[in-house]
Image (cartoon, rainbow, N blue to C red):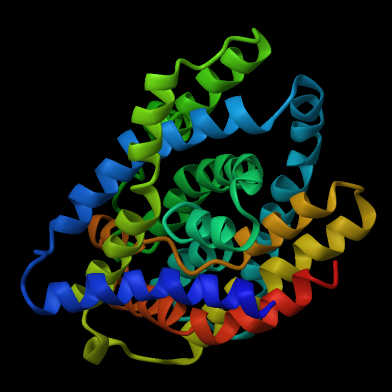
Length: 315
């Protein structure tokens, strides 16, 4: 467990570098957007392609999607718990939808992927992607709808929902890289050496650029501007207690490989999505609450992770 924690500490040191370089004005506010695009459109697709072509057989793949039922059920159950919790805890009406969304949906790629790589290595990547598919689908459908309902003029306005936008988010370059790798693997094609070398260079950018982006986001939202209140405490309980606990309970009922369950638990216990403050601003929801939830969830994660590691090693 100590080795895994030290690996995670290295990941967070990369985030700290992103924060410090933002303070030194090496990085501007929009640099995080540039890094995000590089990760999502170049580094991550090659990462997915190389992982599926080098780490899985046909038989292993067929057993892979059997476990998708756990993230689907766990996220829907977590959403139900968030709706019950916000009623019992009297969450402010102006942030009810945002609260439910960030209580339920986690940061599965920009923090989730680097953390899982640090703990389990490349063999965890396909399981990371499974959870990512479910998380992204729920976030860009139910999640965005709930955030939009926090708008003060919601009674007069019409919430517009575009299925094609959600579909585009789900079928991202990362998923396409996975699907191309899947076809490649099923057809028993060999990856040319120069393609593997080129892809490896790009894939290796995934972790540092992801953590730089998080560091930049935390800096420009401002640690001094973070405001802790009972609703943010509720978010932290959802992210770090309820969400992974529900995954673990489902894992006692639904039999899946141990590594798959461990990865799902890690994914369920990730900080808040980085795009939450931007969406809150776009839909005239409580942006301050969204930004503070993101900041606190990231800053407290390093203190929380030893407890999560102890739990997953008991699985």
